[in-house]
Length: 565
Image 1 (cartoon, rainbow, N blue to C red):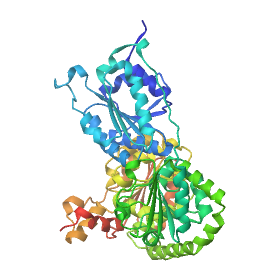
Image 2 (cartoon, helix red, strand yellow; image 1 turned 180 degrees about the horizontal axis):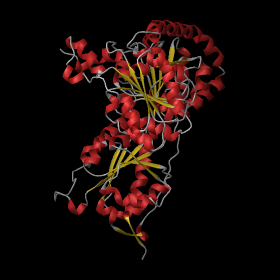
Image 3 (tube, helix red, strand yellow; image 1 turned 135 degrees about the vertical axis):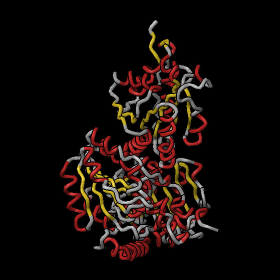
Image 4 (cartoon, rainbow, N blue to C red; image 1 turned 45 degrees about the vertical axis):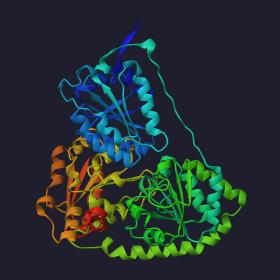
């Protein structure tokens, strides 16, 4: 009888699924899988912290639009991974977290690193699985991939106890499964109803979110926008699905971004909300006029109708639905008349765009010292001007300034922490992006507070030969919290907000990277040029003005339960 152990089944099942990288930090409870991964084409990408491993998997899943795998050991390895899983849940990233745990025979015996992991993570994932039979490991891995990538993508947890991994298996009892679901359900009837509502509108807007990216709907979305002449905005992973440079795209749908978003969303009469969540970023739906008609298309039924009344809720794959609407427009031959009808509205939106950006020009062009953070964001945006450049943003105020400025020219070329708002994603995201696109320029702009969380991932970048460029907007503080405290209570609490100056660039130089200090705005671009020319992992430490308050800080100071009664 041919016998192997469970760990070999796990490694072979992951290889059969075409996994290229597993993001991990080693530990005794997962060593059996490591042993057999050596015999596959899978590369174990090891990080300096489990949190960074899961953040890398999150970015990998988002960039590739298919499940990515992270693997951690039991106990502290598992708990260190939780923040990354929570982030993946709100970014809809298809991540499979494989965790080891103590053997089933050792439960409740005070074994090393023992804890009851399943109930901790169960509320945070699409599905939490524990395999208690070694013969069924391939089935459980198949389930994890199907669930993570099916419908609305999201994280899945798979726990493999160490005694199950080490148990002998009769191969005759093993079912090797590889089920791939590639189905694009479409609501044809409501595609026609949506077109009917569009023909009755005067001031419609399109907001395309992460669903447009995960559905690979860029071509269909651009075609629909061009046929109808409806102004479009993008959000989340949907940024760049229709390029910001397209004449009918007006960039991010965030109201705080200089441009057309705030006024357009406040005055529209019809919203086509495509693959997006009606969250805080839209004041929970209150930014839109109560009289505006609302069409929401999503693959997840629980999202339809969240936070406001929806006039037409449509459960559908976004790519297939947009293709169907494009077909209806062809059949009815109404594209030209719609474009004519909406042309005055588009001109209004363009005027909103012009006026909104004019208000920000002073900040973008500021020559003050210390450097205005919006000037830093503009210099980065001007320099990273290729369609395939990848920009990552991390930090509270820093992500706000970057999101207010960045021009996204293609899908999958801008990453930030999104709705979960977790600091520390920056270096792991950037490392994952450079691993995915080794011949592209990858730049991270981050705050001095956020860079400290996973600072040793600089070492990972250098060790793995991933020459990313990291720009630190250094205001010597936890800027967003400091500013929001000053707005709320009249002063900041220094013990919780002051960091002081740190020579981060020298620390990266000590690790073997490139370092530069920038204190004047005219020196930003030369530093960027030198950093990329070095072909090393680089840190540009930029002294920015601590006194500048971002719209994000203002929003935090006035946000719901955070505001004093």
